[in-house]
Image 1 (cartoon, rainbow, N blue to C red):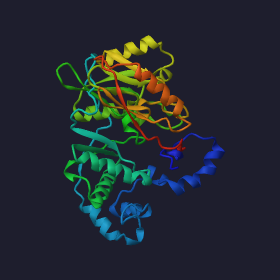
Image 2 (image 1 turned 60 degrees about the vertical axis):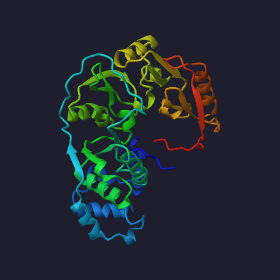
Image 3 (image 1 turned 60 degrees about the horizontal axis):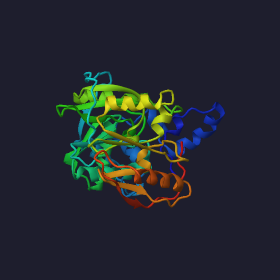
Image 4 (image 1 turned 180 degrees about the vertical axis):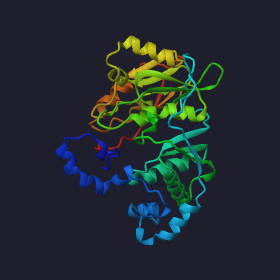
Length: 346
């Protein structure tokens, strides 16, 4: 299975890195990581190499037409100041809206360095643009032009709702390192920036600083939350209930359980935190791999069909069947098919 990690950046024993280097160059755009295409001609050549236009067949790509398309592209592009700092937010808890509440925009960190994932990211952008703005993070203006051309060529996105922000990050996992955006007591937006460092063998500094830079760019006040966690392990129903997995305790093992819960209360408004066992044979430990809230009373859960996850899923369901939300309402469950075990660890 394709591994969506920048393996060429990973820390290896010297001999292993040397042996693996040719393999990385074959399957990943390693050179462009440090030398991104700067001209329409260079970008057109790159798009052809990875067969991202012309229906996946580079033989049908008119290189000059692609160059002209890149030159004539008119994407809406903003540039974040990497040195900007946001205004400090008061240290008061914020309400974290549920994901089914009305949204102004959704952020995507584009998978430029994973060509096999361009189609999937395009499908996300296309779906999002049907209901709200989609803000796509890229590392350079030329990448923004390439993505704009790719989406335009596919023809499914509402391009009037597609915006680009040049804000370099290390990787694509923006749900995990991106900002927690909540509402203060006056209904104004506030950003919470947790510590993001779950991958010690990879560079993470840009991802860890993304939320603060994004807040500064948008003029939102921000506060730092000195806990190690990721967005994929926090689900809110917007009405006083938080769902998390026990990964929050593993990630902050030097804190007592009561101190972690107190820290959660200092940042988010909620009456009840439901913390369930995490999956095994899986490195993130996030709640969103176990269950998702469809509304404040409805839980989507993977069916216990795979030997690798069945026990953990049964434990999670049992736990939640014996819980209620903050309003005292029991949950109803809808099981979703579980894909078979696959390995894409990096």
